[in-house]
Amino acid sequence: MSSELLENLKKRYLTIRNNGLTNVLKIQDETISAIRTFLKKEGFIEILAPIIGPATDPGIRGAKQVTINYYGVPFKLMSSMILYKQMIITSIPKVFALSPNIRLEPLETAKTRRHLTEFRQIDLEVAHATCKEVMELGERMLCHVIDEVKSRCQMELGERLKSLKTPQRPFKRYTYDEAIEILKNKGITIERDGEIPWDAEEALSRAHSEPFWITNYPMTARGFYYMEKEDNPAFLEDFDLIYPEGFGEAISGGQREHRYVKLVERMKKNGENISEYGWYLDMVRMGIPPSAGFGIGVERLTRFICGLENIWDAVPFPKIAGIPSP
Ligand code: ASN
Image (tube, rainbow, N blue to C red; front, side, top):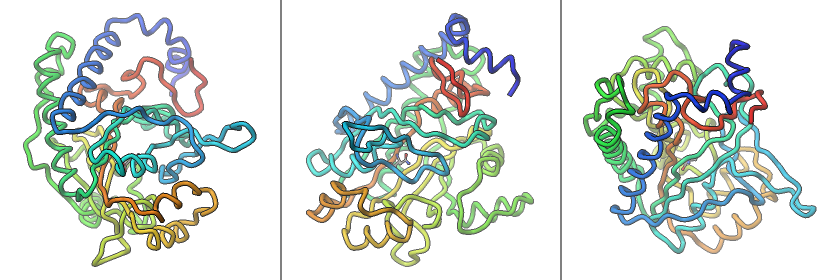
């Protein structure tokens, strides 16, 4: 990252005055409104997201959680509200929140142009739903948002208005194994039990002109809360949606493990300290409904819609790994 860019980020109070950013923020506002309208029509209720709690999402791809001292008790800043989504669907079967997340990403993510250490996701959960159902919902939601923003923000989108196309449904679906094969044919080899690295994911994204799904990531690569595939427990009932044109990951989600015994087994396999999950395990022991859901990153969606090179131009007050900006 150039030192000029670094200075720019630290002096956001100057760069925020340029027209480009004003347009982006108007588009972001319409994007969020369009998602809210869509989800409410689908019967979802919006709740207020938690910001701190005794435990948070450990499945954050190498990023670190932040712990604070809450009256003598260690508390976490939410890295995602997944555990709380499983709590709320015991009372509201279709729920979403605009949830702020903090993840101390590794320093090298400053170069991916799509990682923030403070970001927001529209996080949703549906009781008794399957992966297939929430993936279909995600497709309709993305198409709706693009249609709405294109009709409401013609001036603000400028040149991007022409190149931003409403995707064709249904989106293409690859399993993780198929994605690994495609990468192999491109000369990129990946261990079959890990995450798809950021640059490989970007290469895959660049090779597509429409968004596409990758399903069934390996159990060893993701959080304990995704259900194992019944016919092949080494892989999960989960999915990512990848934007085309090199923009990379859009959505991450899956079906949840709601069975107490299985969940404890998974936590142990993932090396979790069970004693840190007090309320969560008490709740699951009492019984929670099966569910599926996902989160869509708001800044990444803005970056894609606006066709921006850098994620830090898709947020008013960007926080990038290693840069102490306002
Ligand atoms: N929001 C994701 C989900 O619903 C979890 C995450 O952000 N890691 O599965």
